[in-house]
Image (tube, rainbow, N blue to C red; front, side, top):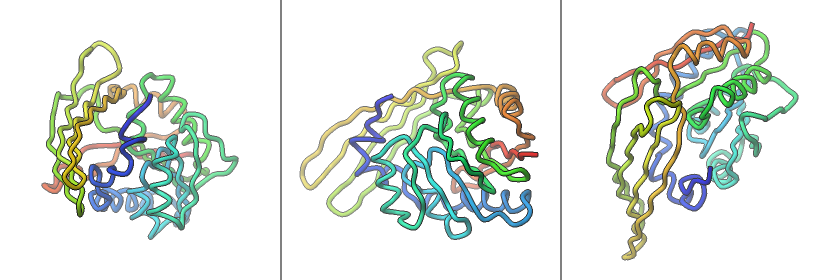
Length: 242
């Protein structure tokens, strides 16, 4: 899928998704990995690492390898994380030929639109997780919890500013996809332009997630993570490779 947000709009990306917003969540993932993996985990692979916002915090503790399908996003991550290894690859098909103590699959997993895609991503994570290691899968929501929602965005950085609307809705509740609409007004100096970017995203019930992750070979558990500054939590999957 062609995406403006992960291509043409990458120079604006950190205004839309600031790295500091990921610190509490990254701390949660680090603590979970350290709790379930022995000996103390040292190496981390992130599948679909995007701009490297999670890695910016996790690299303090782990030696990180970061993969993504967008060269533009990898370039942004390299600028933020020059001390990390970067790999251009699809998370459904990546095969590095080595394993890691832990694997993180953050919201890139949202772009798996079918169970076949989901299983391919889970298998990629499994083959890169060492025996005794762990993987976290962090979908944005589940079929049981999805609701149409919108949020406003306002960010300024020097002579540039963004005002926007992010709207998630489900035009076909009977299938396994939803839609997120991004509408931005981008100001640079005294010039303003409007941009619309539509993302098709996967949506599956928890039972499907558990079945697919188990089929890939993982022992499946859940983990609560912080999702906003008010202390709200949701559940993601903490999986171990036997």
